[in-house]
Image (cartoon, rainbow, N blue to C red; front, side, top):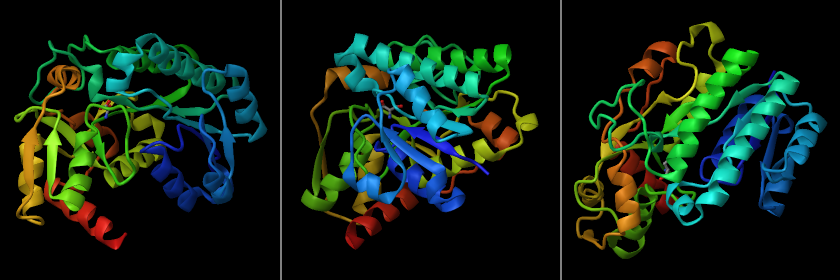
Length: 311
Ligand code: SER
């Protein structure tokens, strides 16, 4: 049986992961924590308002709920981090270090996601290998790369069962916020409401993407697999498909034929996207723990519009 503490639980991934984990492990065994308060979340199950940079509070909460696992999602995303780099370093690094220290003290399993942002301009862009040149060019990427290494360190030095994946752009109904890949959510909402979208990323900016059910499945699968199967353990490349703004437009037009896409480039986010890979090689995740995404671009598009219509 698992008792899990999830940080960043009100975020794009957290909000849906909490729901899924509660279906598997039971409502009372999944403790949601976020820096924001939420009366709705409090009604749905155990919830703690918590700042991950307050190590004492983080530790008290983990102990009070007697958890055996931490899923650490709290983080400032790439575009926002460029506007507040020092604060991002604090939240992304101190938050992670606090989580890892609690995992060490309490001997917990520890999961945290890295990102496609952990790569940089000198990384091979096509079929980006699991182990390759990283040298990220953004504060968020620097935090994620350092985080990957820290997780490896806690496993090697202390034997902590750390695990993690490199997430691509996540597409879901819950709004992300502050990310470079956020357009891949906005484009569906704008298409549905207005039949048009202005992209802040240039035509031809191809990035790895994933519809959220594939991300949730991947996290749970990796958490559940027997530890002896894991060679890389942290920062597995995962991706469902690669797409640029015009690829989304083409898929959207099968549902909304008059959909119009135009461009007004945001140099900051374009710069970030240009430093990331086009397509990750996911062979390590496939071989070591059976990663198998289900949603391609067409299926994602279909599912996004189906859900919007239901609402
Ligand atoms: N979706 C994230 C971002 O754009 C990448 O990890 O910042």
